[in-house]
Image (cartoon, rainbow, N blue to C red; front, side, top):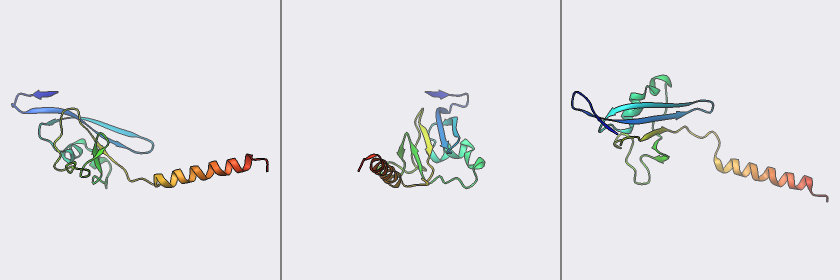
Amino acid sequence: MVYLLDDHKCFIDVEVAYALPEQQFLINLRVPLGTSAIQAVEKSGLLERFIGLDVTNIGIFSQRLGSKGMASADVYVLEAFDRVEIYRHLSVDPKEIRRRRANKSVQKMNIKSPL
């Protein structure tokens, strides 16, 4: 939804999301039409709350900005109801997790087999 306020500026509602392993932050904002993704992150207050927060890895609805033809976070202009997501770096590679899980399954099968 687009809002026209007294000063004749148009505003839109957006959301900025950031998650820690134990807690999730969803910040609802009303920003001027033409706001970039990085500007919304700055306005959310998360940069002050989490000093050193890495904002080089940002996406819109699970689509990483600055890759696969998407504009970078400082260029991407938000639309009404967009959700800006700040991604954390993975502590363990997903391929390694799958490899470990597969090894555990093989070990369980070897233990259960009556050889």
